[in-house]
Amino acid sequence: MSDTFKTIAQFQYSTEARIVKGRLEADGIPVFLSDSFTIDTDPLVSNAIGGVKLKVYARDALKAQYILQSINKYALDDEGNAISCPNCKSENVALFSTIKDIKSFFAFIFGVLFSALPFYTKHRYRCEVCKNEFNLK
Image (cartoon, rainbow, N blue to C red; front, side, top):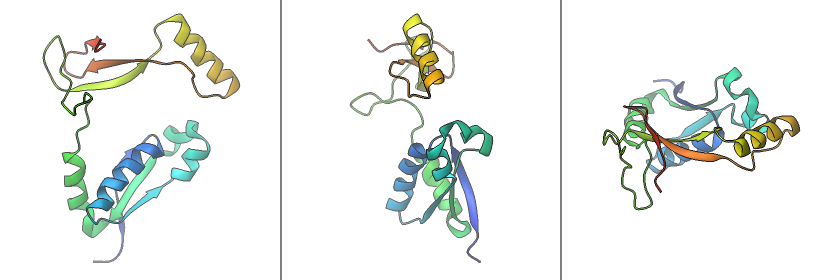
């Protein structure tokens, strides 16, 4: 088989892609990131160019996809246990940022106007099954 590349995943930010790249390289799979420098330079173009593409040799694609599927995509607590929804007890819970109070709204507006990173964000958990939003505390 020739040395052609296959895109097996896309990420909005290069930091996410680099974490997965490290995991695949630990298993001996050479990994190439496409468009990571472009997105590092200007993160706002990520959606326009399709994000950071994680590419492997075509001969390694099936093994790499199997490894990607084994990575837990949902939130874990400090001990590494899956966080479960208090409403439906599902473990399909993801962390997300929200703008629901006045302080986070003004931090967002400041970041947009002055091209600065947000200095205040509020994080919550959302169940992918019942869409319940909650905090751990």
